[in-house]
Figure 1 (cartoon, rainbow, N blue to C red):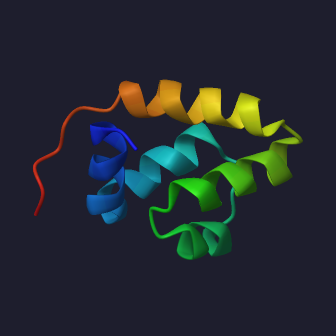
Figure 2: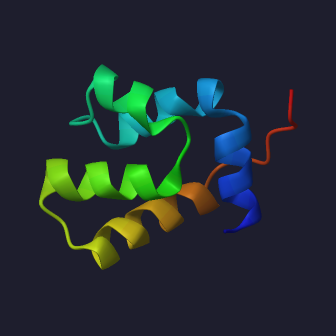
Length: 73
């Protein structure tokens, strides 16, 4: 797990809006279930978009690399 994913998990309330913008097919219920969990996010992206695990991982990693480092609250 990279530093950026720690940032995502630690700041989920702030970051989940960005997740929703990137993957608009994710529902509000999906977002509640994810709770910043990378594996759950990958599974939901695969399910909603019909992607392979590898394709979902690429999307998530590319997205997470573009996030600014957010100080933990």
